[in-house]
Amino acid sequence: MRCWQLAVELRPEDIPAEVEGLRSKAKRLVERGRALQVRPGAFIALAMPAV
Image (cartoon, rainbow, N blue to C red; front, top):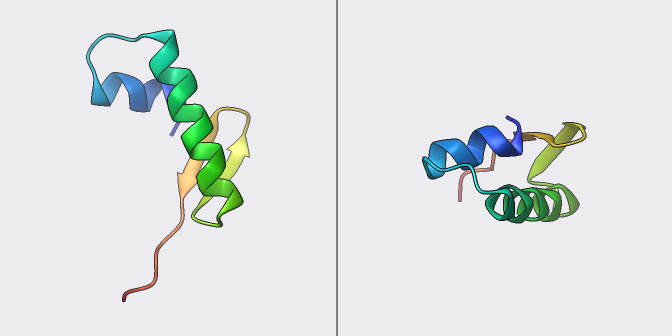
C-alpha cells in the first residue's frame, strides 16, 4: 500500500505531514523486518509469527 493511500484511509484529509510521518514509520518497520518496501513509498506488511 502506498503511504498516501494509508493516510487517506486513516484520516479523510490528505495532509502532506501525515504522509511523511507514515512513510518514516513504514521505513522503520522495514528496518525491523516487519515490512517490505516494494518501491519508493510503497510497502507491504509481513506476517507476524504468533506469540
